[in-house]
Amino acid sequence: MTSFNQSPKFEYYFKACLRTDREAKPVAVGWSASGVIADASEITGLPRDEFVIFEISKSEFAAFRST
Image (tube, rainbow, N blue to C red; front, side):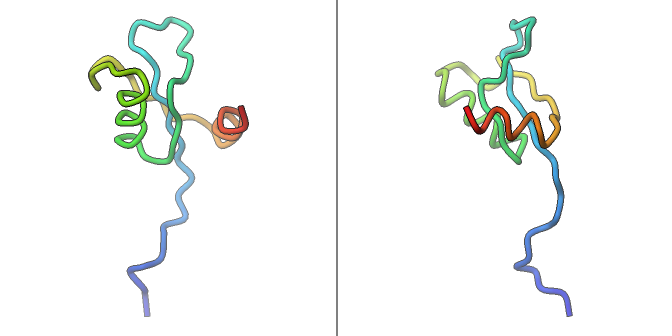
């Protein structure tokens, strides 16, 4: 029987960067695209439409989280 309380085994990671940043430096990273946008907006105080989301690898995610 399947339990609905199990978390899915997806490995998607996202970063939010300012739209105007040519180097695409991450402002926030996370497992949820909408959560990353919300975090980036909260951190910078800018509206959510000022950011763009990129999918990143697990190693990029771990590198950003370790800093």
